[in-house]
Length: 327
Length: 300
Image: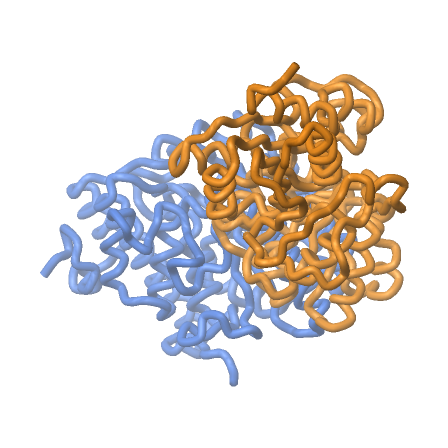
């Protein structure tokens, strides 16, 4: 776990300004392109949904639109890396990961090409569009591929950090970028570490491990628990692969149980990764929150998260059940 | 620095063709020997593609330096039909990327010579291929990189014909034509047989040249076993300025070995020792020429 722990208060998030992390992604990418001539972008007709218009206007010679062709776009990324460029391959996460899974496995993971996959509008951001456009399988699909690092930033500050880190990170990465508005959680100078969880709420009764858009909800859940005299630790496990084993084991040792919560299927994603660590190294009571193994109905992202109890109340209830204090 | 040209290619065209023909037969016997050793392999495609591989690697078409396999200015060659690793590894070894004795470890436990090529294990391999339809998208990315970097190296990719049933190839073809990648050359090993049967009986590929033309490529159809003609044509690239090139090489699966020629069963047939000996005679290769492979039956 990173050395610096924060202790966010739920009240501080009330009414906070909200941000679309794609903006931090796009702004940082343009800065990286200015400082490094290898940076280039590949999109699948997704110029506006990946917020790439600015990059395209500033660096047209380093911008490739392959059209609606995800298998090709990942292969093109591998070839650009072979040719000495540093490609950011960007598209809606549901198609980028699902349609090109074999290319992600073979052309990136197995081949170890230095390509950054940017899966946009992940989770249920496209809630109303239905399960075809939900991307809740992507964490399970990507985190099991050897050599592929998986990062799920929680706010615009962490998104910008992840992008800056990706420039010097040698090897393929999957960056999961949501479009659901989230508040700023971190100060600009927060010392993020790749592969390390960051503690955003200090506590020692129970641990909530979250990432992405769920970190805010985990902080709110910690507030509800605090009102009942329960001190919850909230860890932002933004790097899902490689997972921060030490922070997980420490949480199991220092608190009475672990609740994971993710905007993804609860099978195979963050919860699965945490469960694998605990089962082998420190078995502990656990609850895994995420979408159950069903195709979600139609509805806004907010509606769907509430519908599946992936909100402050649902997380707090799971923690109380875990501690045997539910009423 | 500059690339090494192939050291022994004779200058006279007729002599060069004859030399390449014999080199290709050495590659053929080498690949069959490896397949016999591993009891696995893809004999039919190894034999159909040997002349193409030899022309490109040993005929001085590719600007590469085996002493510096990651030289940034090298031409890229992507072996999209990665299952024909027997012929591919043999030609890489002949070009000087690694010693011939290593070929005798083909598919052995922990060998650098996987059943399908691994760039992280073997020098000269540009991409990990094996599942079909991966090479052309990667090649398009390479060609785009050269364009972005304003460098003059070129990208070659060898695909099978059955392989073109994978849709990713046509996605990549559209990108290549849209960006006018005339630094890209697709060579199709048109041997007309895929794993289960003849291509035209499995899923019709013809008219293949018209398909590539419709996708914006400058297309030439040639005899994929005519070294002189291949050398001459591949020395004048691109086929047409502003367009990616496609060479449809009409070949015979199992070429050069009577019992394997044009037989679907030899797609991944494994030769016996007796068949290897017969192949050696038909290919006109002397036993001594296989020295260094250190595998039966050529062990000294």
